[in-house]
Image (cartoon, rainbow, N blue to C red; front, side):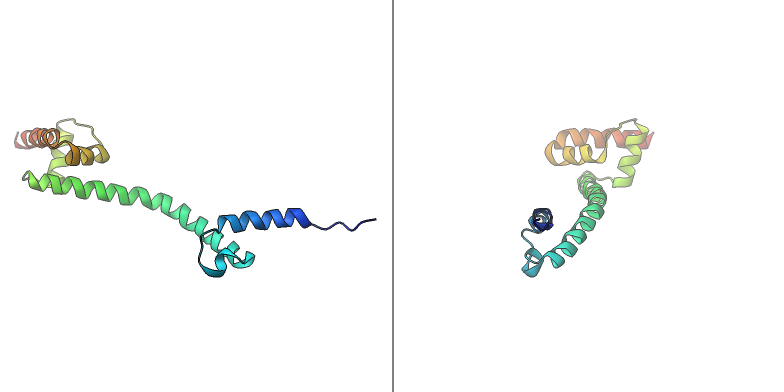
Length: 119
């Protein structure tokens, strides 16, 4: 009777892992044991950074809005306060795009916010 060896399953499993480690530097891309650790760590980083990305983009949008507001002579916090008082419900991503792409529309929002702050 022929001897059964875990040949193809083991090879396939290792090949799959090395494929995930493709592009890694040095032994991390060729040796199974080090590749396994590197891939596990990369999954941890990916999981963590999917959450961090949201924070970083919000901070970027706020920075862009703030710069555009200061050019119009108002601070970011006062601008947001004026928008909330005038019931404008645009998120920061949309405001950031307006500040970059459509200066006139952003300027009109700034004047609307200033009007509500003066009243």
